[in-house]
Each structure stands twice: as C-alpha cells, then as structure tokens.
Length: 271
Image (cartoon, rainbow, N blue to C red; front, side, top):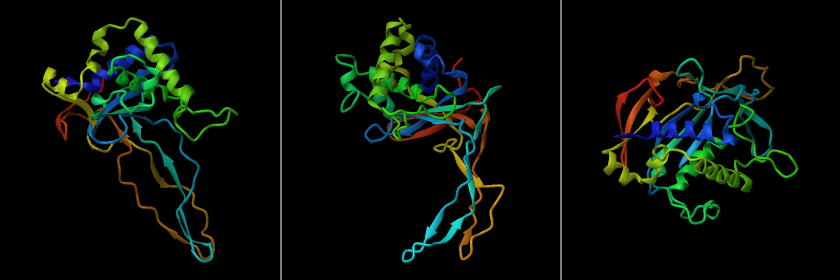
C-alpha cells in the first residue's frame, strides 16, 4: 500500500530544497498527517496548523442581561495555549493535515486558482495545494503568514489574490527545477487509481483520531476579584492531551467512506 503522508513528506523535502521562496521552511519541524474527508463532500483539502504561538493574554467569557445590558456573570480568566508535539530532538512547530480521499480527487474544476494554470494537467492542483499550505508558514517563525492590506495593516483574511499568484509562481519554479518524476508522480492518480495501483492508501494519524493537537484554554494562574453582582463561572477542567510524542502516532488505511487503524508507529517520516 502507498503511505500517502510519507510520500507528501518526501515531496515537501524536495520542494523546500528547490524553491528559494520556501527555503525558510524547516521540514524537521513540520509533521504531515492524514484526516478523513469524503470526496463528494465540501471542505478543505488540506490545512496548516500552527503550534508555536505564545500563550495568549488572559481573557474571559461574559454574559449580559438582555434588558439592562449589564454583565451578570462571567467565566474565570483564562489563557490559550498550544500543545507540545515532539517527535525527536526538536519540537514540531507546524502540522499540515491532508483530507483523504478528498485531497486525492481534487482538480481545478470550480477552483478560483484555475485561471492561474491554463492548459496544465489536473494533478497540478494537488501540487498547488501542498505549496499553498507550506506558504502559510510564517517566515518570521511564529504563527501563520499574515496577509497585509495595501496600507500595510494586517488583513483578517488568510488569503489574498497575490497569495494565490505567489503559490502558482512557486509551483512553476519547482517543476522548472527538474525534480525527479518519481518524487511527485503519485499526485497524478486519483483515489480509485491509487487503490488499484497500490492495493490501498494509508497515512499517519494521531492515536486519538479524528482528534489532533489543537489550542486549548486553562484557567489563568492569577484571578482578579469578582465584580459586585457578577457571578463567576468555573471553567471546565481541560482533560485533553497537551503533550504528544512519536508514541501518539499510528497508521490508518483510508477508504472512500471510512478509515481504520492498522499498526502503531513511532516514525512520522519516510525512511
């Protein structure tokens, strides 16, 4: 069977080494994993998840009286933290998830990036998505790449027209660099073709599948005194996992409508 996440990991290594605009990405601090997503359903093909954001400033939830507008209760003050994922000597700073089989079956049909690739083969859409997610990694090393408005301020949106154009230029730069076809040839096949060719499609996932490491909240260490006539609601204690190691990974086989766990593995990168 083809391990799809390992093949993407090897492709990312090659892309980063060949595309100057992505040289700042450190593949050793990036983990590729698989999530389930049906091909006939709407949704993202892939997502970049950041694990290196600092602890947030304290904040709280509050509720107002509908008639008076006054705050009647609030939560405890809390902070938001990132989980720790460490699969060796260095911590993982970014996760990139790919939805299988949906990612395998994508094309340029109904895509806003179609106009950037006139006359190319449909599988290039998958290569574009991989570089698209890599380009979300912040060159400053913290968080997701900010999108700037014309006035220099940060946009609340994750993309801009120039973002898509930059990715298309990087895709062409990679292909023009003469990579070995066997590095990216697996992208040429849709999910049904992959299953027929390799006998199945597997990928690395987290042991708590379908969950994966995400930001979480916990009560702040210092709690200010409650305001008069405002009830303070205790936060629910976070019982989820906050540290992950190689032992928290396993391999799943993906089908058109479901996935199943195969074997546990402590290795997240292809040999």
